[in-house]
Image (cartoon, rainbow, N blue to C red; front, top):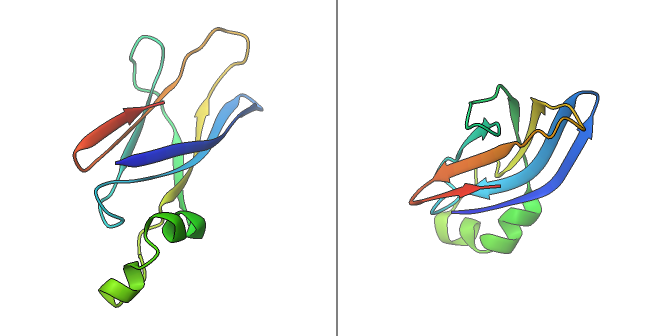
Length: 103
């Protein structure tokens, strides 16, 4: 699995994270979860985002080899409640394929 956070921004009581992730291949779904300092699950909203640059960088010949474009959106945009200055810690977990990552 590969994953990267591009932006992490705190604004208006929320932590906004943008990045991308994929499993063994671009078809393998990735599950995201958010935890707090004590390991408690945190609520979050999530949206898949098209990341053509990731497709081009990691799968430049996918369409040629498979006869079709990558259907799954590899990017994500995520928001979770967050109070700046409270010493909060938020971990983003991504799992897909044979590996897990934590940010």
